[in-house]
Length: 197
Ligand code: ADP
Image 1 (spheres, rainbow, N blue to C red):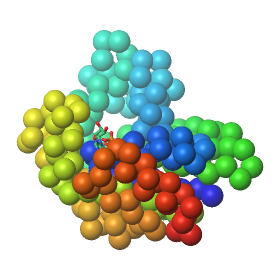
Image 2 (spheres, rainbow, N blue to C red; image 1 turned 180 degrees about the vertical axis):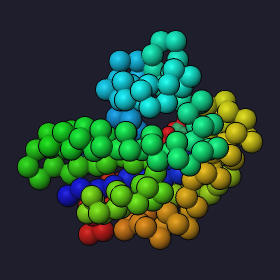
Image 3 (cartoon, rainbow, N blue to C red; image 1 turned 90 degrees about the vertical axis):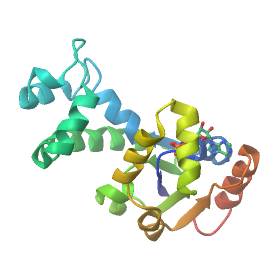
């Protein structure tokens, strides 16, 4: 069983992912971590990125300057297409490599922050699991975790799919609102035994 896990920033997606590993023995494939590793200094995507985008988007250490890239992608949709054309095939190869390590019958959990936004993920998983909560809760959690300003968090939220869009794509939803971390784990336990997955 291949499950795609998604949720807006601060929804509790990473916390649910950990619980699925601890309680359900899932193999976690973290696509965000894969993408980050590809774009660190010495990362496999760096030669192609520096050829295409030039030195201005590379830090002195040789990593992708993520803030500069975010700005560029925001201003120029062609840059986004070019970035994705380089990164997506590499992410796919590494994702498949990690998923192939699953034991027979082991649940494979793909943590994909932008699953709903990207579209290409839907047909690669058997089920979509969405972690959902109120926007105000997302904002409060992310401020507490990262120290980002409220306006910075709201700007990130505005770029992500809406709660309605995400829930429409879901086979199962964990509503992470008004729950303690222990109660959230109980929700995961329940889900692991439910026919939804
Ligand atoms: P995401 O991966 O969706 O951005 P995280 O799982 O990292 O979100 O959760 C964001 C923050 O909120 C973390 O610090 C996490 O510990 C906290 N958090 C998430 N859910 C709960 C909860 N039910 N109760 C208390 N804290 C929570």
